Length: 310
Image (tube, rainbow, N blue to C red):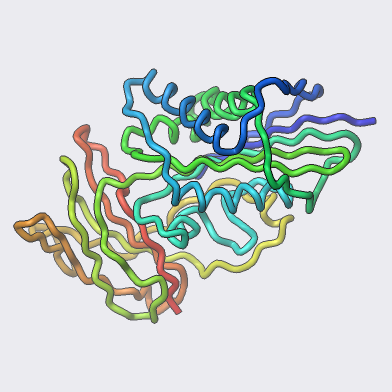
């Protein structure tokens, strides 16, 4: 009878990493942790990895955790690994819908232990899953043991501009199989951004406004458009690999640069600009990204909002 142990992982800028081994890991039962305890332990491991590279620790983000948990549970139930979900949504849209206002960069992982045929799902989710220390350590080490240039997960963990992280874990099982999934939702949040609509009409003008925090330099506001999300089959999801942000069709800069409208700053540190939601009059999912520069000269997205434009 065939026995398998499959570990899969994926990061936004990378292709899938597939690791196959012939022997199933022996399960330790004397150090079982609840979901909350396992999340806290993974946070400890993440911060050990960051601090060993001279980086500040990240804190737990409940909004990103909630957004990631739904995705981890769906992947565990249907036995797929992808950044997309069955509604065709990507991490930033799920994060925004959960109430997030920063910028979410996701690691995802799926480990599968089975006898006989590889399960295809749907499987029964464990309502109150438990995890061993080894399971959590194996997930983190799978990410961190990547080598350049195929080290997207590792680079995500070691990104100096991350402030917080959402940690999601799920398990599912049948009589002959068990699946464990994880998402790490790293959040940049170096700026306070005021509310934006989630739905708008093509050609609408919206005001992007907020307040700078910390010692960052403002760079620009960009607007890009992707196709409107549509449902995806599990088979389609299993074929996906990397994901990326749609290219900007317009960029708004502060005064002094060539720009359709200048980003205005007040003496109190508030900024604002009116942006137009029309990429040649096409509907879709529009991405509004606010770019800053850190003290090393690195440009990064501090906040990203998605708006469904009809």
